Length: 139
Image (cartoon, rainbow, N blue to C red; front, side, top):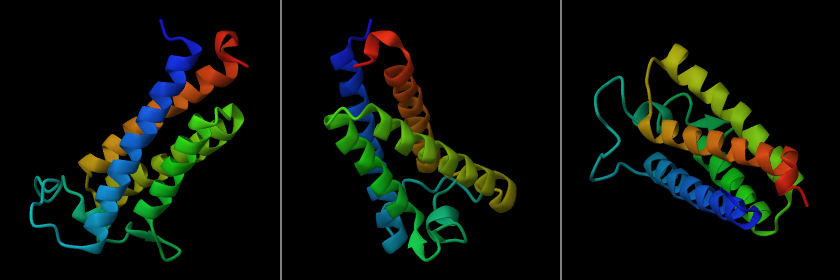
């Protein structure tokens, strides 16, 4: 059973994983990696997302938006700001849903790293809901 302290540690760990994934996607956005670990085939790869039409929104790299989101989650989880975490993670879930729909139905591509980011965001969302609405974890 998770204690109040442990649930915050899990959230902090998830945010660090998200930061690392976002940094990897940003690196792919900036460069052509020597080792293309994300390219499986034309339907499963990161290039369509990091170099294509979904790579920026309003001129801002999508990976940077994700990076700042995960940094916000990290700082909020360290400071134990439950409402702030919930707000950031809710935005993140909506943003991830938008990107997933665009990847699958517009680009017809699946980005494995993006899916991992989305899984991290989903788990963070569930934890944020638990922290905010389960009496045991409320302040």
